[in-house]
Length: 253
Image: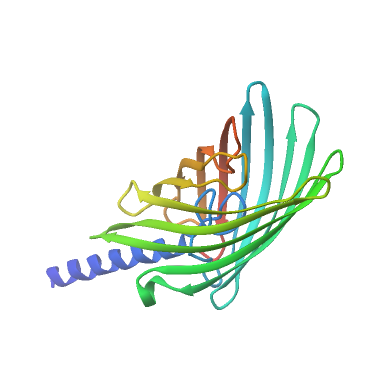
């Protein structure tokens, strides 16, 4: 009987770890489920919508910019995620901008069915800035995510993606470019409450740099809360450094 209970507890622990891994599809800084900068192939669980708020600080040789945003995502239909959000930017030169976005992601394949997740998605953003700096920004992507299990520890997750970005400002020439990206989530603790995240991607537009960031996410046990922070170049700007912090909440957990 003693060994039977031990076996049952071990099976339950593994099942809980697997479930937690599936449930923790946090939002990117842009609002889709994913890493910090890029979407993964995971989607929000049914009956468990998510919201997140972020603070982003960019600085370069005396210039600095602060940004505050709020985003949300929900599984609106089977395998279909819808997201929306708002971001406000302001700098030390009296410029400000407001961004609104809506997006959708459809999961074509799932880890449970095929051994990996595969999803396709798109996002539309409308930005309105001072000095008539208005325009539209479009994103489309294809992402594959796989969880690599390691005994009774939380899984390491790897993501590969292909994306297309188009910036279409009102008063300037538009730019359009395809890029590739990769990311990894590595659990620091056995149950995955603390995870390290790293991302790397090619240029998203001409005259830009590679996209990269590194950070950490923390999920308190038994709570829908999540906390994240990191630094890098999450949008591929040419110079400067970006620091960011994020807080999220999953309802129904």
